[in-house]
Image 1 (cartoon, rainbow, N blue to C red):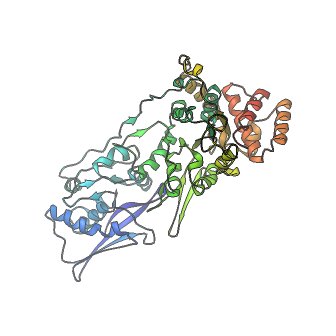
Image 2: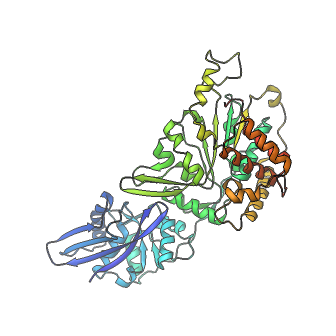
Image 3: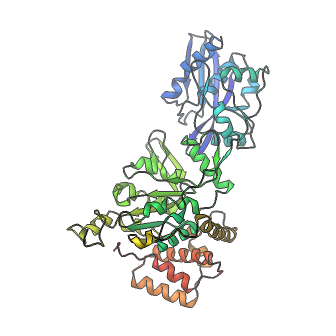
Length: 503
């Protein structure tokens, strides 16, 4: 008779249910795992054998066959150890078979039977809830999985505790959700002196999730302002927090099972590879653009990133998803993020300062920013020149307007957008609007339409650029608490499409 337990195989953020079947049959003693296992899964038989020996349970002198069904789904990772051990113990009648058949289990086994934490507890709990099963996972993963209230989570520390629980000797209490992590916000926008236009652009970008490009001389405050963007954003909605936490769970970034309501802020170095930014590598793991889902991706020194990496950003910026395609695996991850980038105007950084610029001015500026392709540059809603800060600005007292004050206006604007898109569940901010929806929410008056058409003709705006101006204008109107988009809103939006440093 076959004993069964269940576990999951990860396919992107989706956890697919896998049935672990164990058969004890007559024949030469052997322990075989079939069902397209990778090296880590194949090695589970030795870890399971040692862990059972630690419980004084010797494997029977029979042919033990473990089948991971469906057999055509790749099985990757060490989290298959625990479900295999449960299926073997059920086949040996050590624990009731009807108990293991109701469990989704994941966890790595040490040789002494201790359960080692693994990634993906949160999406596994969702899969268990959908299947109507309970979840068994290591103690360190319990608080993370317990956030899914529709499933009972049992989190033993050792295989012995797990066995005693199913045999009714020592029932374990259900795991409790971890704490909500609220990191302290220590960086305030009031620390930035001067740069009022750039601060205004940050506020607009935060309110509508618009992509922002800052260009200025070294030391003008570009990175300093970008680092303060998280303080302007509202907390994650419950649905957004779950989406983001599932991705971070797969990447092993959730500490102590806590779920954060703060929006992600990812700032990879410019030497990062394409797999690190977009996703890929062994197991097609999520990249930085997916880890920044519902948050901010900050790319400092944008022209220093490789051309191949920059061009891969074009499609995710439009669709909000990225498919990591490999020969034997195609995985789709969500990546609805706000792109904030910073760059010097040229390699030496002093294009506008004749006394400090290099001898290649102005060609050095054209060559340097020319590394950013036109299609990618066209995807930035806001482009801002950041001039050097003068000594008189540095001597000024701190601004009375804090990040909290700006965040209140941003939250108010986002609340308006949420109410506006209540009939469009796929749309969340103005940056997502397109087509007929954009025409409805950003209907211009006669004066606004006239100036936009004139600007489009004068500056050769593409169709994408035209629509991005409309989206920004709609966000400016929301910050102004205006139901209609008027001429001042359109004019300000147009001004953010023009930059002296970019041809």
